[in-house]
Length: 219
Image 1 (cartoon, rainbow, N blue to C red):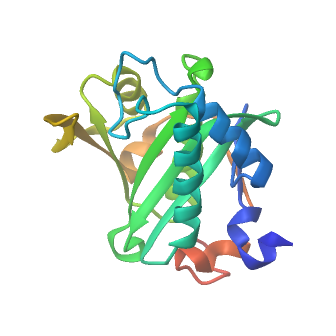
Image 2: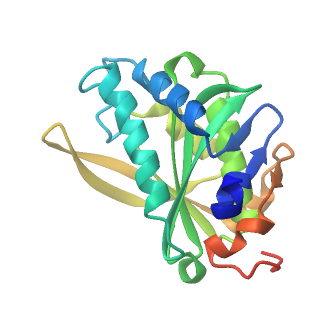
């Protein structure tokens, strides 16, 4: 089985409505086609990734390339866990948990996109809670960070509802112009204070070493 060689394929995060897991080949194709149909309105630009450039096939192939690159470049010192978001088998989008030098820094960052038809249903919040449960409660993170454009009101709202607090700014280039993002941080202490739905993490024991933990460690 693939999970014997790449144990992250056995890792599943289960929230009240969603499953977060590495997509299999045809599921990845479905997610890519979903992104091809759009992840935000064409007159907006809430992400640094130029999702509205090119056509549906360009967006779909971007998802494939990014996913394969993350898997192939995985190392304990620098990893990205890109999980498909599924509701009763239907693909809704993808969420990514990233860390560099995690065993020392104990910090993660999160990224996500959802098919445009699935916006406004609380999916993004629930999926983020699933990722953060893995990071804080099972991998031992001390903080989670996200950078959000100031005009990305949906992501700003999700982050602040979950207890993220201002932590400065970052500056990127978007369409040839400098654009400011709010850097937001959620600490372990703030996470512990939040009420949140029950989340179940399955299959982590087999892939602890891929995150740098001994296979039988408690975190």
